[in-house]
Amino acid sequence: MTVLSKVCEVSLGLASLALVASTPGWADDNLRINGFLTAGVTGSDMKSMPTCPSTGYSGAMRPSSNCTVVTSPTNPLQYTPYYDHIGGTPSWSQDGILGLQTDYTIDSRSSVTAQLVSYGTQDYQVEDAWAYATFKPTSNVQLRMGRQRIPFYMLSEQLDVGMSYPWARPPVEMYANPVNTYDGISGKYSWMLGDVSGDFGFIAGDAPATHNSPYIPLGFDIKNVRGFNFNVYTGNFTFHGGVNAGNVNLNLADDQTPGKMFYNLNQLLTTVGNPGISDQLATFYNLGMIYDDGSLLVMSEVADLQYSQGILQDPFRGYVLLGYHMGDFLPNFTYSTTRTNTAGNSRRSQALGELNNPANTSTLQSYAASQYGLSQIGVANAINASNLAQQSIANQGMQQSSYTLGLRYDITPKMSAKLEWSYVTGLGSNSGGFGGGGWGMFSDAPLNGHADIYTFVINAMF
Image (spheres, rainbow, N blue to C red):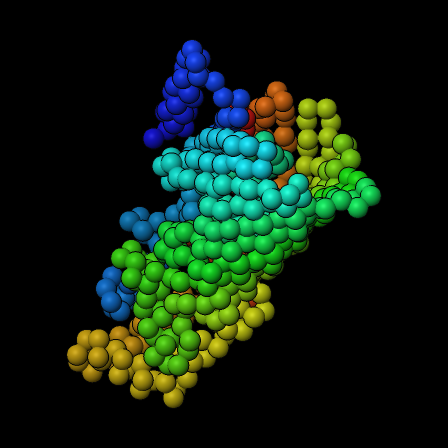
């Protein structure tokens, strides 16, 4: 389904609401309906070598090839997708977003909110991003229950509303977290002290299942999400911070290739005494700041995702943006970066050491033999599977940085156009360890250590 057809669908819905609202005897000033749209085109010049860890398992354990990749007319260098959807062919759907939000005020202390969003990367299927009830027992205390945004970031609540930030898309090095919503409860206490105001809040609940995310390429959910966050406003400054945690459960029964790969990886790791990757505690730390005096704009955030065990990416990330308001124009420059943190690299090194430990050779052979029933085949497949597992573990490391030049033009107060060029660098092969940079946020091993990303979008609110 195209953006245009989705706009038509939502427009028909709005027209129906308007018709009902104009019907004699029906009126409700407590109902408010808003919407937002992002449409554009983006592409990349990155080429890659196809690699076995991406497609190396066709069954329970047996690799489908020997991991020797040779380029030829039938197996050429390929454009590899960036952030799962941006490739050498211009994408008209990567940044496509259409949202519709309805707020209904019940009385002075209670209300309900619903937000439906469709994304181009998901073929514009509609999902409920927000669905919660709000109750205010006092003027400075607010309680919500239902589906809400996890306050991971400074811009969490407006993450899909392109009109609310300067970029075509927020820096993916920071904002590529696979889960942004949860089902549960939140509370917020607002305060004011002289010229300084702020709020302090908590959240608790469960995050819904996610499939094929850029960071974890198979289904998973997060149980027992909990956290605290704060915002402080003083003069031209805004400060944000928070700590959120939850128990990550991977769907290792996923019947897609990534699920099979991670299933086998988990089986091999637990066979040699490693805790594996099926269940772990994830903790997300975040600090952010905005300075905007009407001319100069400065934005910056840092964050760290830490897993309690396993070999999944636990990146440290951050960015800084400098912009300058020039009437309806906002030229800006952003530097953003992400890299696997020290604890994550240490756990991956431990896993590699356990797979390479001669003391575990017979254990791996016995496991392979039990899978295939013949010891001689089991020995060969134990070696192949161990090699593939080691390559997959190494490729879980991440490092990349990007330099982005952007220009925002406010066409009207409710519509803007944005043009961006991003230079992504710091990429390289991880086959020899964790120091080579890894694939970054590309879906396959990049041929070069850098790439250019070009983007043009239109944002609108209605």
